[in-house]
Length: 234
Image 1 (cartoon, helix red, strand yellow):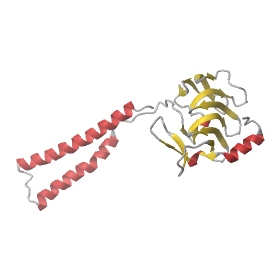
Image 2 (image 1 turned 45 degrees about the vertical axis):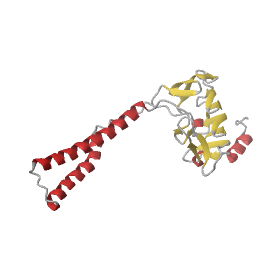
Image 3 (image 1 turned 60 degrees about the vertical axis):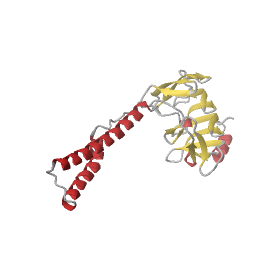
Image 4 (image 1 turned 120 degrees about the vertical axis):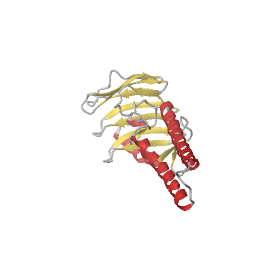
């Protein structure tokens, strides 16, 4: 299909479903696209637009996966990239400079190769490699190929260099305040309403055990969260 033909392009745009009306359902790595409130995986064209309504991308989908032609345009309406996909993975990829010239460095065939993306001023935005149909960008600031994203949310994997913020910082201290406030409130009630003497060594042991329990519980929660973020794929 030739989307460079204005008549064909206009027809596809009318038929295409807005990406905002689609959702991914399924286990990670096996998600399928569905139209919201529908029970069958989506088959047809998917489109994304810029905030001003200008066309950003068109992509063919089949049985919930990207399959066929995918094309992306910049805000001025110039074609930036064109790819073909099979079973959700990239087979071939071509990118273009802002002047319309085909990028001589981008060469992806059979799901393997390299690609370059450009800024609107013609400078290189990012470089990436494609292995077995999955793209990984070298530049941290790289945006995802337009034909594979939903207003900034990509449908294929890449490493983003995302910064991880340790839970042992100030945020953890803030989250610890409610449990300790609860403990001291409980101590106050025990002393005032139930007659517990906080000067009694046995009473102090109870308080210490409560604090130790909460401290261990909070520490365990943050440790698990830390491990999950460390081992999770970027």
